[in-house]
Length: 153
Image 1 (spheres, rainbow, N blue to C red):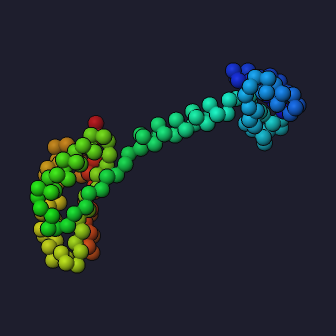
Image 2 (image 1 turned 135 degrees about the horizontal axis):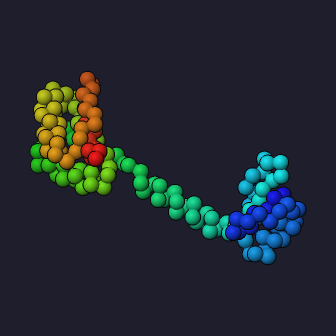
Image 3 (image 1 turned 90 degrees about the horizontal axis):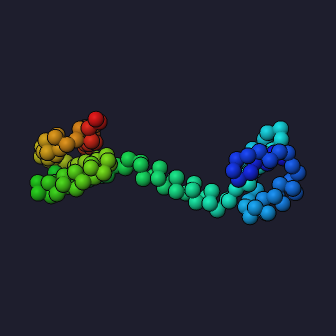
């Protein structure tokens, strides 16, 4: 098998026992990098350190992901409660999250569609300076959506 040292230099072609012995002398692990090649390639690395770096990298990527924050209400929700939602929404927009407002017209409030749409319009007007409406969808059944995001610079 072809052996690659910790610093990336090629050690040459060695037997499995010799490669393992060399890894033990250095106090590291022997990891198979490519077993499908004509001559299998192995690398001497500190596997715990490698796993730690991979975990850190995945956490960093996870932090960069845009999350969707969801705020739901019904047509009888008062305006001061909606304004509180908008304040929380502004904080999440600063963090870079997408916002989803959902208004639910349950059976009890099904005849209050006009009131609910006025509240959605109120949200749009409050956020028009800081955010852009990505999608507004009025589903004929019991739900309406409003997606909001930061404007792209």
